Length: 69
Image (cartoon, rainbow, N blue to C red; front, side, top):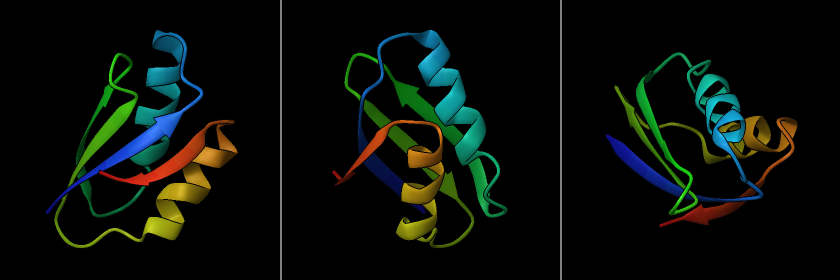
């Protein structure tokens, strides 16, 4: 399952790594690809991932979850 989301507030590669590491904490996530230029994250998982959990992890890192693309 692939989920692509919009994230606001990223400004550097440190931001990319923070989001990548946070999203990899979800058990079913197999890989995460974050694009600083597009302000997106593409999450590949074994099964559906809770959007509430994604939003929670992103906001804990200080960024804004702006929805699914």
